Length: 148
Image 1 (cartoon, rainbow, N blue to C red):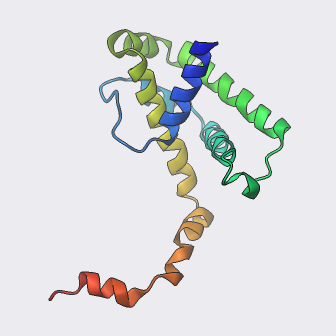
Image 2: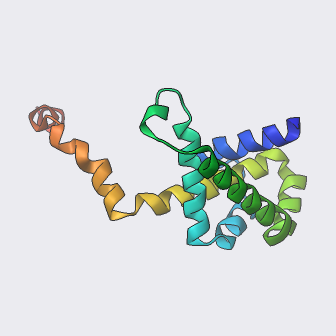
Image 3: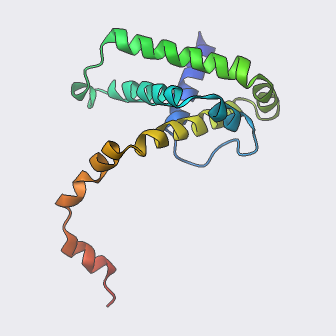
């Protein structure tokens, strides 16, 4: 049970991480990315959203039913199992042998980044991210960039 919890935490944290990859030399991450479909990357991003939405300060803004959350958990578990035990088994064995748990963490960091990048490239998401710009004080920004 402890190992399952640790793996779940490692997967989640590294899906959200935007720091440098832990296992840059490992071929596990690229294999996993290449083995996933666009739909699977979106499902992973959805799972990440549901997990973040569980935070007490954010929970009120997202009404994710337990049934939908459980289905998402199941999809992610099936994806993780397929990637590590079928599609990228040899890479996973090599990475784990050479780098241990950090190799798996680095691989999921890459997979999480790719999943999020795919969502961020959507026109509607780009507009939502940029929507705050209309409230910025452009004159104050000009002071930063003006040469004096």
